[in-house]
Length: 57
Image 1 (tube, rainbow, N blue to C red):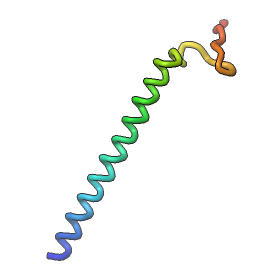
Image 2 (image 1 turned 30 degrees about the horizontal axis):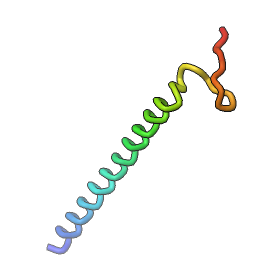
Image 3 (image 1 turned 45 degrees about the horizontal axis):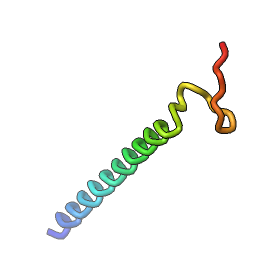
Image 4 (image 1 turned 135 degrees about the vertical axis):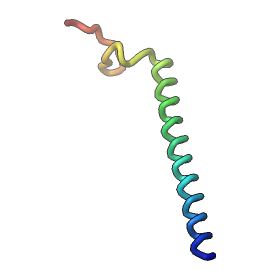
C-alpha cells in the first residue's frame, strides 16, 4: 500500500512538473512574438546597434 502511494505521488509530481515546463515554454514563445510585433519583425531586417540595416544582395 505504501509503494502505491509513493508511485501516485511521483506521478503527480511529474505531471505538475511537465505542465509547468510546458507553460514556461509557451509563455516564452508568446513573449517573443509580442517583442517581434513591438519592435517590428526582426526576421526581415538584420539589426546593427538597434537600427534596421538595408539588405543588399
